[in-house]
Image (cartoon, rainbow, N blue to C red; front, side, top):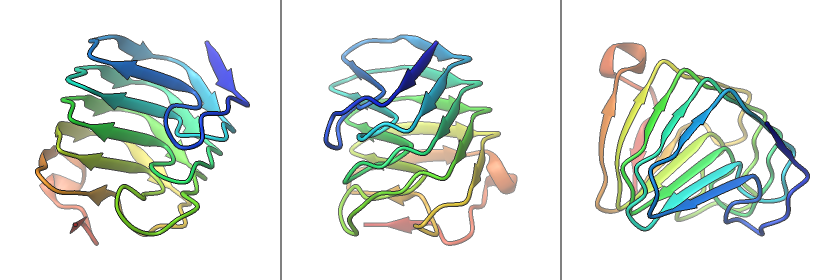
Length: 138
């Protein structure tokens, strides 16, 4: 599937899942005027093997997770640009009030230098041997 040119301000220009547990796999999520993938309200998606690029929302950019438990693995996340700086902004992945597992992703060419992890987060980072340079919690 290709999700492109969607408009969703910041929340889910490409794919939005609320309170669901979908497998989001093998998609091209490109050039949306909102977040590439937005998960919220208890969602437990498996997000794997996707290309998420060129999304330009106000917040979240590539993937935005709120009050959810996603597994985000083996995606190519690049050239996403959050248009604001502050809570929930992050060029590649932004998580708040979430329990996320993030592993094996290639995250490149971002305006923000790090994923944004906001209040109440618990995260397991398998990339870079459990370390992510510049990791910041808000």
